[in-house]
Image (tube, rainbow, N blue to C red; front, side):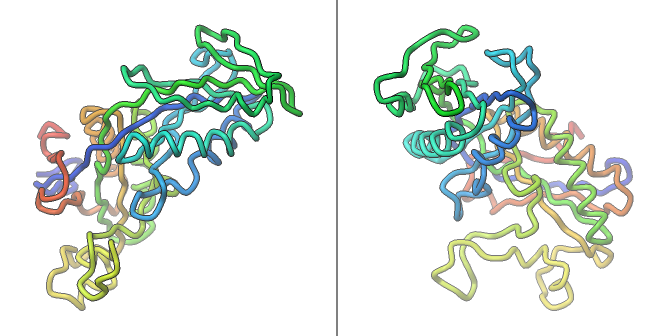
Length: 296
């Protein structure tokens, strides 16, 4: 299969069930909304070593936020509901409540809700009110008042949708990955949680040598090893590989994001092939076939 002259391998991305919460963060301007969102989603690349997977979903206009201010939607993901609750409490309490002019609201309609009670910080001076149809607490703080909603929807989502970008050189692969991340950023209900949305150290489960390691390099896709191992999956002209990993609120959202990412990546000169990571369908519930995602 080909798209824009780039080979699309007939394979699938293996994705996993996850629990997802979505938070709307607002502030006095876009600069501060982004600062808060970045802090709240930090150290959230992969649950291999992070306490949650988290990322910025989209910027919000003043018309899209409960309080009519600039905002950012973030998503926080964990394999367990209680894990999401713990991460919401920690990240919202330590990164949002502490930030100048920040406010936070539930951004996900779901039957199940998690109580995230931060109003006790007000030591009895806090009070309830309504903002843009949301019932919130107003907590007096040095910076004025901290506005916080205290029930957050949580629902099943999908983690681990992915695409591998194989290119003639590292910079072509990186440019294509950046373009893919930008395109995915337009797909509502999805995040790319790694730094800048791009994964340089794609991994495999376990280790061939170190039994104490939960994950190690995916040597089949390491350019510097292609002439040193027999099982390399890189064509001779490929010297740059990056991965983009996608989490979302549904299988459909992740598929749409993969499609957007692939269509953007193949337009970059030097891209040779697009493939995806899987483990033979043994670990993940979802198999997102590239040909189905693209309608080929």
